[in-house]
Image 1: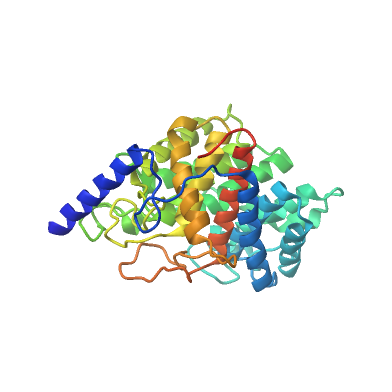
Image 2: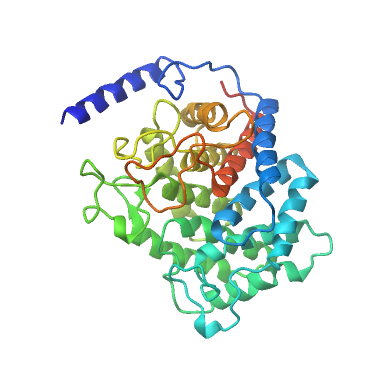
Length: 391
C-alpha cells in the first residue's frame, strides 16, 4: 500500500509539472524543450540507421525481428531517398530469395508459433512481405519474382475458411499491412474482406473495451493474469504493434470499406488510453497501467506509439492540440535518452511477450525491431514538421 501511495504521489507531481508546460527528462527533472527541427530529426534518423547498417549485415533471416527493422528502413528511404537504405533492404530480400518460411507442402503449413519452415501461415514469417511489396512497387519493371511468394502464401491463406490466424497482438502489425499492400497491387477485394474477418477475431479475443487496449494474447487476459499489483497487464510493445499496425492499415483501406470505421474507432480509442499511460519522462513503461511492475524506460513500445500518433495527426485523424504534447515528450526521450551519441538505440526490451519484473533494459539494450520502430517515428515526425511546429 505504501508503494502505491508513493507512486501516486510521484505521478501527480509529474502531471502537475506537465500542466505547467514542462517536459521532463528521464531522471524526472525538467529538460530543455527547444523547438524540434526537421534537420535535427533527420540527423537522428541517419545516426541511428547508419549505426545499425554499419554493424549488421543484411544477410539475416526473414523472420519478424529483422523484418520489422526493414519496415522502418523503407520509411527512412521513402523520406530521404538515400539509395543506401533501399540497397540494404534489397540485399536482405535477395539473401532470403524474396521468401519467408520455405516449406512448399501446403498441407503442412501452420500458424501456431514456430520458427521452422512449415510455419508459413504464422504472421511473424509474413511481415517480410511488406518490404518485398514496397520494393516491388519501386521497381519500374515490376519484377513479379519479388512478390511471388507473398502472393502464393496470402492467396492460399485467404482461400481457407479459417479466421483465427491473428491470435497474438503482434500479428496485427505483421500482417494487416501485407494484406492492404497486396490489395493495392492486385485490386483483389478479398484481401480487405478477409482482413476485416481476421481482425474481428483478434479484436474479440484480445481487446479490453474498458481500458481501450489490447492484451498480448489470451494468456494475459484479466483476471486470469494480473500485474504485480493485481491489475490489468497490457504489454507496451504488444500495444505498440497494434497501434502502429492500425496506422499502417488505415493508410490503404478505403474509407468506404465496412472494416474502416472499426479500425479508426480502435485507433482513436487507443490514442486516448495511451496518452493517459505516458510517463512524465516521455516514455511508456513495459506494463502500461502498472509502472511499478517493470519500471524504467522502454524504447520499442514508445517508438511505435510515437509513430502512430504522428501518423494520425498527419492524416487528420488525431487532434494536434491534444496529441502534439505527447509526441514532444516521447521524442525528447527517444532522441535524447534512448539514442546514444554513437547512434546505438538503447532501452529496447529484448525479444519476449510480456513485461518481466527485474529484467534489465538499459542504454546497452538494443534490437533490430526497436531501430525499425524508431525509424518509423523519425520519418513520420519529419513529415509532421513540414506542416507544423513541435516545441
